[in-house]
Image (cartoon, rainbow, N blue to C red; front, side):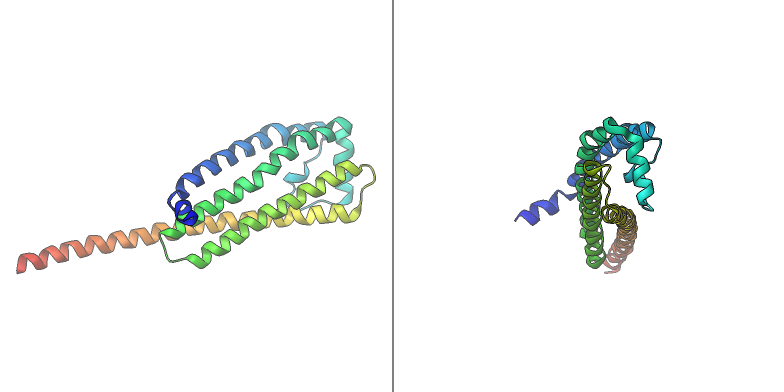
Length: 197
């Protein structure tokens, strides 16, 4: 029953989750992450898709200072706690919605796994960032490398999930076009047969 209700409202869910996700992403890019970069003179952890070394992490955390590190914890981390879930819910809703109109359920499942994996990696990244800030200046290389790996994995999985959603959208458009073309061809044929009789 719940699955049936969910299926009927996938489009609305995608719009709501997507709208909130875009709002939070906009706040992070234009406010919190921009502030962190301005204060530290370094690119924030969240904006390094190729990862970071212990030297990079130390430079960023030192450049932030005590107030900047508190800002990271109190402003950026809360926003980045909501964003991964909203992005995953948006992608899952979009892919399930597209999947309703075409026989591509395997691709939908792959896309959902990628979306959830990206969100999980984002949360692991956040935990690593929190651990680094709380333990500063006693940084653990293992924590930095784990957080950096999570950042790279998040970036790769997010890109793959978004590309899967786009691919599903293209497949759905193609499927609908073919279905509409078949209907357009079959209707005149039926009417011609009726006229001949």
